[in-house]
Length: 403
Image (cartoon, rainbow, N blue to C red; front, side):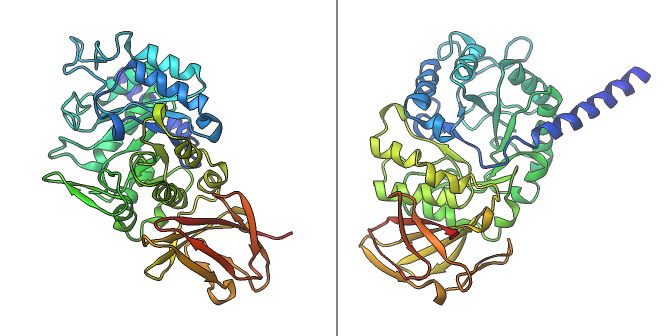
């Protein structure tokens, strides 16, 4: 009995110590790539290697993307005789450790997928009842990121299920970023900070500006339905814990302008920036959007405050994001399909964020205005901001107190 008590005490101590290590894994929103949006379960070893190569060759790694996440469908349909998960031998003939090692050799981090239920969303073995065994296996492979889904979870308590896997991860001693993919059904923003580093706030995204596509019992949502779905959750996001608005559809069929808006809004909302396109065939314009370091810097701002809708005039929406060092970012979005002219006088439109207590003090501070997509300085806040924004496009700017 004493030995059992000692073991349990050591396990609890280990979980506690490793929980402290995990706290520093996502001080800014995680950045990376996930296979699901484009490939579904049609994944394999060569795809992973090609994507890892593309991270480096296309400048994505230099831009800050570092997690390469393999989604559903990587495992065989049955566990082995010891109830361990087995990589599909046809898709991954050299096993998962070799794949992880290749990703690591590129200076990147590797992520993997499973589910809190008995089966995954695609019908592969889930982790229900095997949490500690599966986490141990991931750690042995060198996994750095776990996306944990919510299919086939009848009679499970969401918070409890994610706590079990959190403890299993911490027990391995390996720092693994924990991505909660519970779709927002059980308000994960209210308890997610205790359990993981990021949590999905919606169901699956789809590559459209403003649409909803039904799948029987659930629906995929376009960019703007996702943005507008949740109210009053921005207070739950911040360094180490992030509202996740889903993997991005940049490069997956919308216009370049709509892609700019999509990327800008995920940046402004402090969402994790997880690409979902085929990097091997991505256009130059798509890569320019995804690797825009001036735009990315807004997402990676150390203050970590999620943007809010400052004004909605029908044709134009202005979103505001307070940043560290007294700076601000704004995304001015043309919601129509026709060009719209703006003439914005900063002194007529006070900007104050009650959540962060930050204020754009144009009455006593002059701010320089930087166009982040076009990489050029505009006027200061002493003058009206005039611009023509094309249909479904965005003017994204950063305001910096003038020295």
